[in-house]
Length: 146
Image (cartoon, rainbow, N blue to C red; front, side):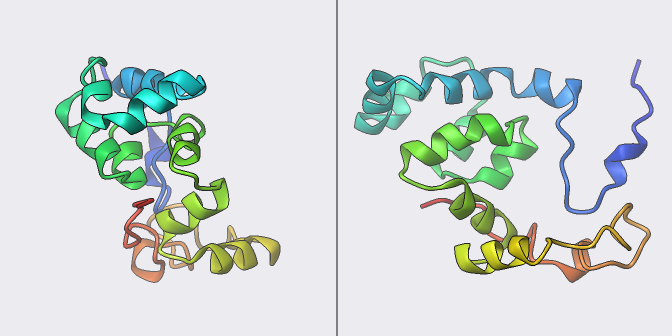
């Protein structure tokens, strides 16, 4: 039985809830494995071989191979776990966020230093704020680290 999820109407946002957690369990476990230097080295030496040790879906594996963070999040990835993938590729969290929003690292930093996006008009998809899909680069950014 599916629960009512009114929070799914937040524009440009994938909410990491229990369902997303279940969907991305092995993807997130893979990411956590990258906390160990030996696992990072094994992954970098042969990404596909290392990924095939994990019972992820093929779609999740392809998102990792493409370093496509937006796709990985849609497939159950949690940004805090995916940060391990970014770090393995030598990317900062700020670089990751920029790639996901269609902004450069500098543009993203400047936006956040200026206070980020206003919540006004961005609480649900029916509002007309700057974070609405039609008014923002997020979702149009590649989300790819490489």
